[in-house]
Length: 134
Image 1 (cartoon, rainbow, N blue to C red):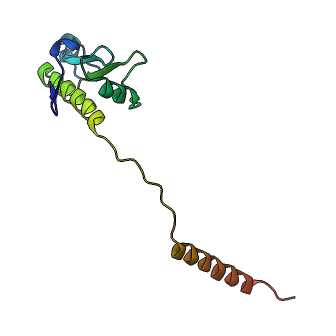
Image 2: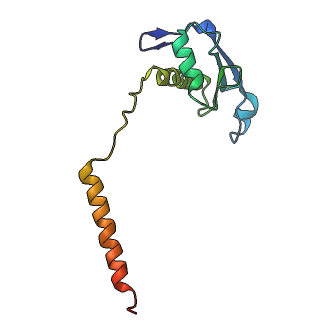
Image 3: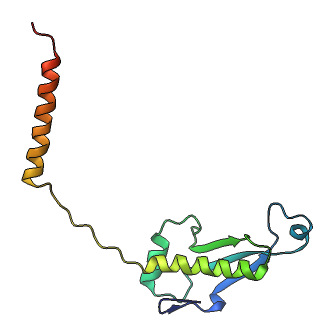
């Protein structure tokens, strides 16, 4: 599997065929078409910076031990489910490659502060004019 100049050897990805859940009748009861994909992030050959980003993503598919688990059972074809699971793993790793820009702290301008205060004064004066006169 390749993700933007990164490749993960197939030996690091464990895929097992299991029986699908839900409706499907005899096909579901007899054929193991669902795929369980396990990818150990900590033991993988990925660069350490990417491993750390993957573990920091707060994804509920990553266990405490750093193992990424996917279950693909959308189709009745084992091959299609296998491809879908690999695509999801690829998308997960691609998330870690995106480097977000750091936010620059900004302050409101003097003009925007004055506009806000003027609207507050106008609103207060309007409310004041609605009160009963003593």
